[in-house]
View 1 (cartoon, one colour):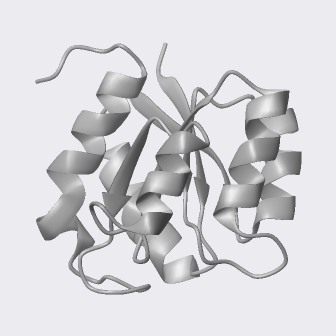
View 2 (cartoon, one colour):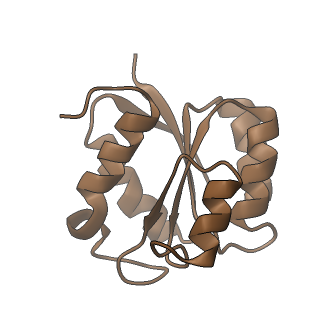
Amino acid sequence: MPKRVLLVDDSGMMRALVKRIVMSDPDFVVVGEAENGWIAIDKVKTTKPDVVLLDIEMPKMNGLDAMKRVRLLSSAKVVILSSVAQMGSAVALEARRAGAFAVIAKPSGAVSLNIKEARGTEIIRTLRQACDLPIE
């Protein structure tokens, strides 16, 4: 049975690009998408994901606040995928302290058209680790 992934990013284009990456691995299925933290919280309740792939900078409720609420509602692992969470940054450290399983930096800003080439393998590997699946 495939692992369930919820995609949360305010950019529809980024959600589409990341969805293609996730769906390229037959061990995953995207069960929902959300464009802000409030919608993400509702989607966690209804879709029951194994992993939430979450942006930080979003309108209405940012990803860090959403992650804290998601962790109260669900045992889903949270993987941050954000342009503001560069390795070692204060935001990345805060996300890890708040319980993020992993933090992956978008390669070229909020809308990273090169995400598949630059981070596709890392995204899949991190999702597999979060779900205790073998790394291929």
